[in-house]
Image 1 (tube, rainbow, N blue to C red):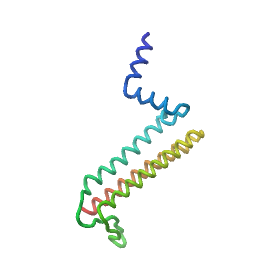
Image 2 (image 1 turned 180 degrees about the vertical axis):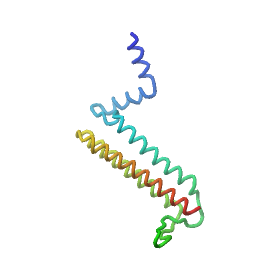
Image 3 (image 1 turned 135 degrees about the horizontal axis):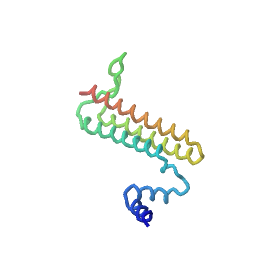
Image 4 (image 1 turned 180 degrees about the horizontal axis):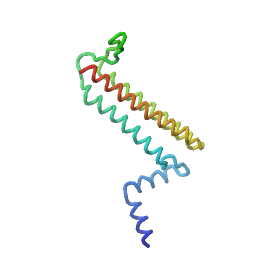
Length: 141
């Protein structure tokens, strides 16, 4: 009886409902139930959202052109509208989604290491784009 109440309490929690949703939605595919996959997806989404947020906070509607790229050898080599700075997180989001779909495909075909590497590469791209966005912000302020 105690196990029954514990099981029903866990299915009422937010985590239990989320797991139940993914179990029924993706029956036979435990891609989203794997802890490594969940953490890599979560960190990838958080870093992309942080990149968008950082740019939204610091690059608000500047009238003049902003420096979009700086080269050590040649100095400023790319100027443009402040909206062009948002191309970095947009490209990062597209790459993240492509890698996530490819990782799901490889996971379904029992190539788990390949899916982990794809998700880890997507996370590294997101972290690199945060560094690039921070550099663009520091150059302009």
